[in-house]
Structures are given as structure tokens and as C-alpha cells.
Length: 333
Image: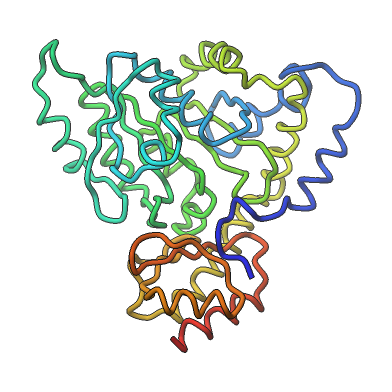
């Protein structure tokens, strides 16, 4: 009974079927009709004209966006526990050719304008100091907290006032939108976001994420960066097909809702063991080593996050019987 990571979830059958449907002779790279339709389909979803690029990983999406927004001598303000800081093996610095990640504090890996300003205002504006050029936030955060549109907009206002670009890591964007119940537009470009890493792999896709630019000026150069980074797959139609299948009839959103519902069931059983509010599909739980051992002995798989703390993650397809069994086990600790 696996609650280790939504990365391990299977591919949704509709996504697998979509890849089979495009298994025909067609133009290579991103010249096929499926890749060429991504801009229009995502523009419809976001209610504005966007330019979209498929990539095989979330790390690629994040780092290509940061490379577009930040010069090698600049900095990107992010949370101390952000994925780009802790879990991407130096890829942001690699893709940007050396830009610095400038680390901010914030409860539950969320940032406020005050958290961001505290980092920027401590930097003297002279040639000896790295200057911020962009801000990156994660929605939902690494601790499963979700930004509301007004919270994103407050950061967007700060970025505009200071001339910075604004990136959103949306590896679990579906979970965030499902949690808040807003439109995708309200929590992205209407709130000042310049680019979104739109995650699908955690949510039912196999190997496709979308980098969505709300400012088309960065699109063409990013196509060249994608090629230079070795990320231009010759059979890109299989990635485009995954994204289009996830967007069809809002499968991405339905899957996000299903994962969130499973986490809410576990949260209800956890009571005061919760380390963070459960707003998406991650549950952080206080548990002693002996309690964690007992849960594993009962057949549950999960991640030891910190001393005395474990992480449970539900996915789009998590078996309801497994969720019920884990909830019962947690309540009985």
C-alpha cells in the first residue's frame, strides 16, 4: 500500500491510449500537429494567449524558465526548501550558467512579499552583490500548502514594482487549483505570473510537462535553450499527446481532486499529529520511529521526512481501501 510519492503512480489509461493514437508516421521534433496545437489548447484553458513548450521533466521546465528570466550574474529568490534549491541537483545553476538562488524563509514553504523583500532588501545595490532578477514559488508547496490568487497577486505586484520576473513551479498545479477552486488564469497570469511549469507527470502522465509562457517574448529563445540542453525529443508528439489527453475534459483537474480527497481522508484521521495543514495531496505526520515501523509492518510505504516526521502522498489512483486502512492505522497509533 504505497504512499511514498505520486511520481510512482501509473499512467492514466486515457493518456496511454492517446500515445497509442499518435503512434503513426508524422513530422519529427515539435512540428507535428499535436505539438503545434498546444498553444491554442492551453490558451483556451488560461483564457489568454500563451506559448507552450513540452519538456520531459519538471526540472527541465523550471530551469528553462529561470534561464529565460535571470542572467548568469543575477539571482532568483525562492524558499529555502524549494524544489529548485533542494531537489534538482544544481540544475538551476547549470541552466542559468551560474545564477544564484537567494533563499527566503516562510511557513510551510510559502513566501509572502515580506519574506521576499527581506532577502532583497538585505542586498546592497552595487556591483559586488548578486541582484535579484526573478522570484520562483511552488504551488502547491513542498509541504502541501496552496497559494490563493490574492497571495500570488501580492507577490506579482512586488515583482512588477521591482522589475523582476515571476515563475511558478506547478509540479502539483492540479492539486493547487482543485484545492482553491479558482480558474487557472486567476492564480497565474492574472496574478502576475510570467511563466508556469505545468506539471502532469505526478498527476497521470508518463513523461510530459508543459512550460507555459504568459509573456511570449521568452518563447523563441527558450526553444533554442531546450535544444542546446538535449531536451528536444525527436518524437515529441508522444509528449504533446500526453498533455492534450490530460487537458481533455479536465482530466488533469479531476485527477487532482481525487488525490486531494485521499489526503483529506488521512488528515481527518491524523488529528494533532499533522505538522502542516493538508491543502493538497501531501500529509506530513508526527510519528516516532517505532510508530513508523509499525505502519510499515502493517504494509504501508511512505517517506521518512525528518526526525519524528513522515510524509504520506496520495495520487490520482490511490486505492480507497488502502486510504481507509491507513486512516484506521493512523487513528490507532
